[in-house]
Image (cartoon, rainbow, N blue to C red; front, top):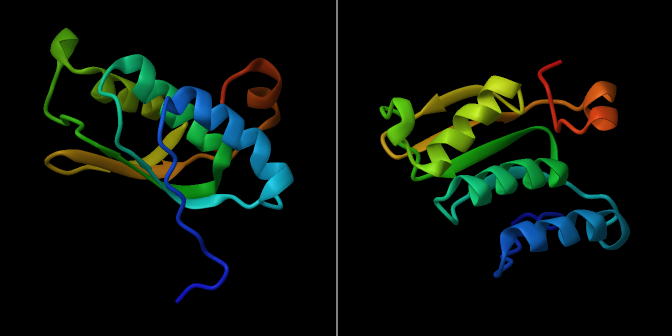
Length: 126
């Protein structure tokens, strides 16, 4: 058992729900953060990108992040939104130490820096 650990499932529009959860976390959860994050929702770019970025606000620096249904062998413009969002997060440093399996990718969230806080980017490898 893990007395201090909780698993919480939130249903609904993830972009709206995650924004509210990030704001509520500081107040209601005592600022607790997630050590493991799983993105497994919409396959379109907008939803996957939003999920990756907003979940990073709830994640501890260096938290493990997993994204389901990514096609690591896809190249070019034919890739689905989730694959494009994952690659963008890697390129920006939001996700680091990344590797992909047959149908998923995993990595770690980068750590925040002052430039990202002030200029709107989420995270960058320190």
